[in-house]
Amino acid sequence: MNFWSERTGGKVSREDAREAIRNVAAFFSLLAEWDQAARTKPTQAEDEE
Image (cartoon, rainbow, N blue to C red):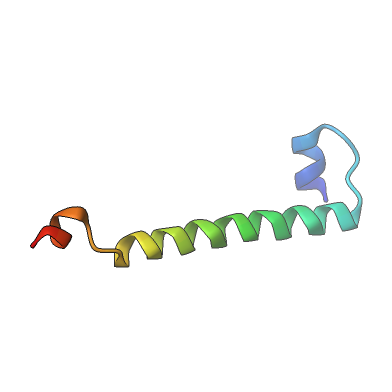
């Protein structure tokens, strides 16, 4: 909770801290999903061959 309190400048409840952690984890999960999709998607040059 201290981590989030220091960054927000206010008091953060235990549940708010948990939600923030879930949101950050979901964000990085989405970035990883997009990265994987971009790596497996053929490029335009490969499509033209």
